[in-house]
Length: 162
View 1 (cartoon, rainbow, N blue to C red):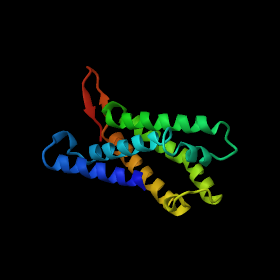
View 2 (cartoon, rainbow, N blue to C red):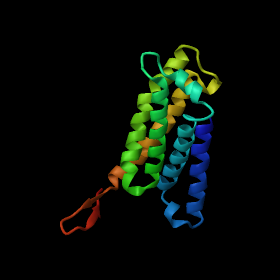
View 3 (spheres, rainbow, N blue to C red):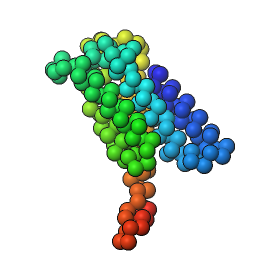
């Protein structure tokens, strides 16, 4: 549940900051990027501390080197979070994190089906709803920036596409 709280709280704080005059935070996608980045920094960090053992246990046994998988996915979450904060990499970061959420979902199924979850929010329905929320946020960021990307025109000038 902590990732959902971080996503919502950071997004709301950034939306409020934009509403009271911080121009760079005014567009809603910027606030959403900040919230999602904070959420992935949190979840990436627990790949190395606090919940590392539990995350390793979540990796289905058919996959080799569960510790390495947890390490790689944690690093990818950090890289994606940083990428969300830098405008030139938003499309890659939001798309990559969305794909990562899809790729990691079988681990959530595995723990739910095998009764390995350690808290109520790790049961199948709550975890699925959280994954849908995170995926929806990632895809909405990707969609917004894809529609508003810039293309280089002859002569080196940029023009926003619609």
